[in-house]
Each structure stands twice: as structure tokens, then as C-alpha cells.
Image (cartoon, rainbow, N blue to C red; front, side, top):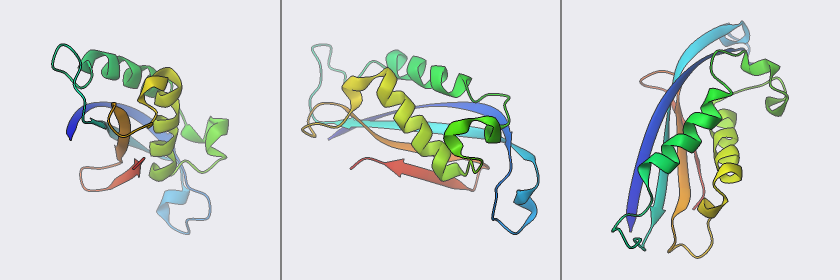
Length: 128
């Protein structure tokens, strides 16, 4: 099995409803995002997937989140947790790059999206 990963970052504000702590107040993060693609078949060029294609798609998705209040984005239903952000990025990437939707497990598929709020706090969404 092969795996490739690209990453980017974005800055955004949010607050969490029903948290009962300081994160209920508006605050911001410099998010780091890592996306992982897996597959067992390489293309004619010996690559699983062109890095630039994946990176361009990721930047397109995170560009819509950068320097926003994530609570203003209807998709998050006023509760943009790191877990929901990871799933949002996964879903948006699949729309942009539908060929990365898992089919047979051999062709490249978008396997995981990691969202770091800090260097030590990560949420991950996977498609096994």
C-alpha cells in the first residue's frame, strides 16, 4: 500500500457551543491540515497521485475557511469543532476531486484528514 500526504494551514476564529469552558468564547487558531491518500496502484509515471493536484484542491478548500469566523459558515451549524472541520475538508475535497472517493481500495482514495488546532491537539476523519 502506498500513501502520500500534503499539508497546508489556515487561520480562523470560532467558538464552541455546549462546551462549558473557555472555548465557548470567541478565539482563534492557526490550523494545520494534513490530507492522506492511499492506494496500491501507481500510475504510468510511478506515482500514486500528483502532489500538486492534491495540494491545489486542499488550498482551494482551506482558502474558503482562512481568516473567517467558522461559526458564520452554515455547514458547521454554529459548532465548528476540529472533528467537524476535518469532515468538512474531507467532504469538500471529494467534491473537488471525486476520483479520490474510495471504490475498490486499489485506486488512490482520500484516506484521512488531520486538523491540528495546536501542535499537540489533532482531530482526524478517516475513510477506511
